[in-house]
Image (cartoon, rainbow, N blue to C red):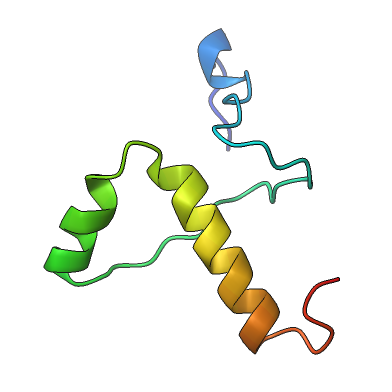
Length: 69
């Protein structure tokens, strides 16, 4: 059951932190990583954009036959 009194700021999409234009999934991916990796990623100034880029590159290379093009 949804919140009957949602805060309006929670209904606005977060602005994109990079210059990509492909539509984003409604739900984000969540994965736990080793502590040292977590610290390194969290130290990045634009970690969401970096994570989106490296996950996309790996998925295209390893999971998609046509390389995603």
